[in-house]
Length: 277
Image (cartoon, rainbow, N blue to C red):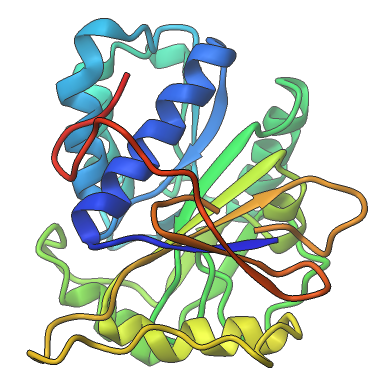
C-alpha cells in the first residue's frame, strides 16, 4: 500500500491523467468506472488536451454512483462525465454504462449493473474521491464492506455538500445508487483522489479504519494558510498486502510493514497543467 503526496492540486490532476493514459495505452479496451465532482475536473481537462493522440473508442465507461430523481433522468453525475469527458473522447454509446435512475425498480437495475460489469470481465480501474465525511462513492460511513451495487440513503451532510457543487442545477434527493464496497474492491486497481483541507479529517479516519494511522504524519496547510497538499491513493491488487492503495509526485510512504519513507524517482518533463505522453 502506498500513500503518495502530490505537490498541489494541479500535479494531482496531471498524475491522475498520466495514470489513465498509461492504463489505456496498455489496454485499449480498458474498463473504467469514472468519477464526477470537483476533484477530477482538472484531470478531464488534461485528458482532453492530450486526447488527439489517444484512442478511447474501445474503452468501456461505468459510473461510480448517481443521484436518484428529482435528478434528471440522465443523472447529475453522468451529465458531468458526459460533458467533461465523453463529449470529446469518442467512446461509442454502446460502451457507456450510466446508471438508469429513471427506472421503477432500482434494485433490479443495480443487479443488472453488477451483471454487466461481470459480463465484460470486471473493472480494470476505478477512480473516485473521498467525501468530507469519509464516504466512498455513495457508501456512507458504516456501510458494509460486503455490499454490491445498490440504492442507498445519503446522510444530510452529504446532500448539503453535493448542493455546494456548481454542476448541480436543481433539487437533490437523499437517495442514490452506488457501486458497493465489494464491487469497488473487486476492481483490479482503485485510485482515490483526495484534495483540499476539508478532506484531511476523512483521510485520517480512513487510515485509522484501515489500521494505518500510527506513525503517519499528514502534511499541514502551508504557512500562508493555503489548502492542504492534495493526496492520491492507489490500490493495486497484490495478495501479500492489505488493500494496497495510489499515484503522484514527491515522497512515497509505503504502508506495508515495516513503515518506510522512500523518495520517488525524480519526475522529468510534465508539470501541473501538462501531461507527459
